[in-house]
Length: 236
Image (cartoon, rainbow, N blue to C red; front, side, top):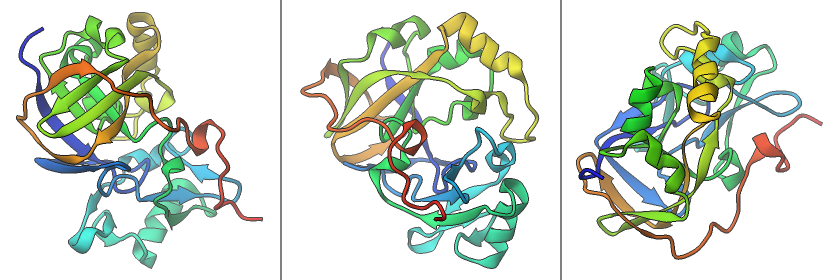
């Protein structure tokens, strides 16, 4: 394996909206700080890019004091609410939530440059938090059970992510290309990028060196609302 580095860092302040590229990220036991701290709720459950494709094209970033912004507006303003209703439907509303269930599987997703190059599409379709350079595509399935040591930070690798229809949506235009998911199924068996969790927190920078070592333990919990955990925000 070549020298492995952190090549990209991404945060998604609002779940299912577009992410923001970072040069530095603080990792906590709850994942990347400020990641997915607001989501879109509907009358019966969470609304995501799986069924509301237009959400994936809306810009989101972190504003002053860590407040998520939706296309430049504070997430808790009427301007942001109108943008979300336009893309998500009349019952769509923004909800602040820091519970661990907001993550689909685990609190970090790590992609590798080898797999992204083999996929041949915009990396944003995979929605990773961390991208590693220097890892061949065929090594991803061998990494579960390992840990990524980045300075003082330790990240456990649990499994390879089963991909869904979100990958077929162009985050810039909202156009759908089902051939992206077909390629993921044909080339990767439907799985690409790594479900990970933070074992030891700290700060990570683009350009940091990554070392591999055996993971000292398994995560305490796996799964979120999307895979069946109770969802407290649906209207009764």
